[in-house]
Length: 479
Ligand SMILES: *Cc1c(COP(=O)(O)O)cnc(C)c1O
Image (cartoon, rainbow, N blue to C red; front, side):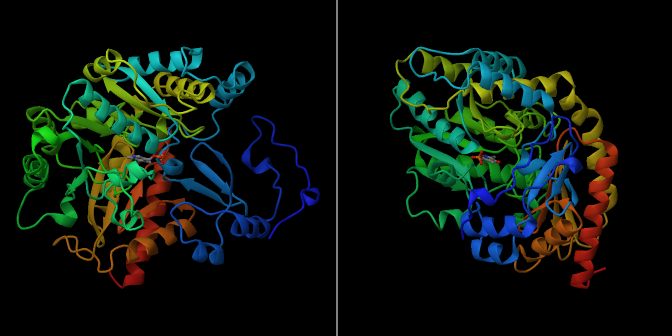
């Protein structure tokens, strides 16, 4: 199917500050859906099924709300895709992009040149990140961030004369993006199944998923410690001289908001130090305030050597990723000649200008502090008060403004539903129809709203989630 442009009625774009309802729509929902089905392949989707059902067309957003092309107002419990930390519709970010596009829309940083936005962003990140992080390399996404991590890790060990350190250890059910390197680093079996070519020398250990995988009477702390010690066993199996790095998300996001017990990360750090292995924190979701700290590794109390950043770095207004280098890694990279890696848009001026505006909002409006001391604790308590004794909720994980709700057949014995994912899909559809965006990973329901959410809006999310989860239990005949 195709269309002729002259048939399209031109509609004036909304004036800055115009409210959502005033935006005129260019096409009917049916037209949008037909064209979408005809020409657009969506990520991570069964396109046949999606085209038959039709996508929901999102046309506008403000604060924590989205509007679809039928005029429905939807509360966004996922901050887009874990990224719109400052909420939708912030003029400061739009102005920064506009100003930068007029001043210098693009210039590269490959050949002895730089520009003010990337300089300001680097200095600001050095101010906001923990003390030993003073250097940053830029890219356009979290996936490219993890590709960059691999390049830095390998170059680092080459500069140390340790050429045999090639293996990178990651975790099953971790998510590190969908480039070939990101997808290989990640531990998503359904992605690996469609990737006959993978990056070499990447191996996986088990994840610290207590509810689903702890056997016997282990406490969460004992289980997390045992899972961390798998890293040591794997290092000994491969040989420490052959292991370059361990990578993990401080908490697994896409894998189901899996929060390891407090024993996990200190043990991972101990093992990495003992065997001289770089520790990489993939902070693409955890970074920029999600847990109430600037970075999630601060919440868990460990110190990585490299930090992958994206999503909240620009609140998703434009794409950007980055890697933060610990001083000791940065020094080796800086003092050892050429590092043969870069992307045309590394440190893109518009993205950098938006990132600066975004980080200043997070800092100056004390958004991160609010998540830590006010809205985060309120959200976590509200979830526990509402679902702590629910007949199909087995576990509530999270901190700050991120949470996972484990749907379970029998919460007391940690019995999960058969056909993992079926019940999550039912629940997700109830949320969707109730105008709440909540994601399902298997049978875990995930929430990660914009960090600017207020208590009334939190109440709205939790009450809509309750309705959806109650409806799910009712459909299953459980009460
Ligand atoms: C989203 C995500 C990525 C990939 O980022 P993209 O921008 O989608 O490439 C990597 N790591 C984690 C932890 C993520 O959540």
